[in-house]
Length: 445
Image (cartoon, rainbow, N blue to C red; front, side, top):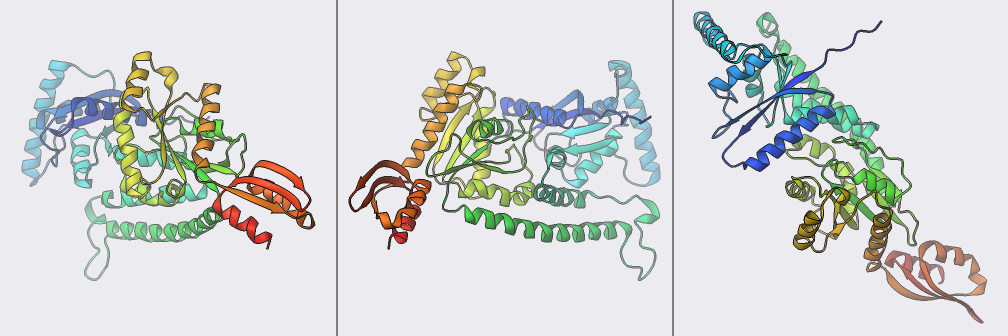
């Protein structure tokens, strides 16, 4: 008989600073709830506060007590000598008693607090002591999701490096003698030793990742002459759905954030000549931890090196404009913002006529589609092929009959517009990439 792990129940905490609008604040907090759900965490309460800035305590005095009521804590972070600490704890018990009389006991207690911000180790420690339970921030939740969903060796290494870099400064000593050095000349404390082990592990993983990435770069270099389109966009915008529709790829499609982490490269289907490759990429999100962006830089090279970016947006999401901007910011960070791109408003089957009209007016060049509509799939396929046509050149080519072995190469590399059998050989009118044209010409010399 196996014992079930206790359900993680969380309180979402949001601190709205002056520069954040009400709409953006609510959207971000709702997204944090979806991130928690992706991890299997049950959100049992929300706690919000407006403040000028997030200080060392994260929440104000009264809100800390409200949080402690939901988590079983005492609402304070005791400091100073023992007498002062005891005085603070005694005052906290009285204040908590009054709050419980006013609001009553909660139906259930949370064992996790998730703050919709990027917190310092000190802020996490202070709030954890006040709440009496574990505290994590937005970056911590995102890294946990990446850690759970990574499937390939490369992705697991990338996530583990980011996770260790996140955890290292947040490691705390167990307290007491374990943190004190054993004596003069004893060397590192337990905490320092643990942190050094983490740094060594990061170095080891980084070397292994560099080796894997070098092979990935070699694979990409072999595809340099191939026409490539990359699907980019916010997490859960529908990129993987379109990857399945535009290619013969068995990629995971789930209504979850970050369901796909590993880049998949497949040939556009139905096939066209010259060949076009389609790649799916990891989704973006607000406040994506910098270490994750750095770790996945190699994976995101698919987007940087693609001839065309399909920027997929969930048009049905109320926060789609902010999501669109986040994607642009991350693409700019990896130097992939320049170049040709096509804005794809997805999930139009979930949008009413008014929303469709608004999108068409504000983004007239965008393509409105639904991956569930076969006609839209056919239309987007045609648009991709047409977009690549401007990269192709026309070529008149004559293949002598004594070099008829080249006919297969012609059909492999070029789109044949006409094929005529004359006395001196096969006359072709072709449309093809410049590199392929140069290659065929060189074979005829």
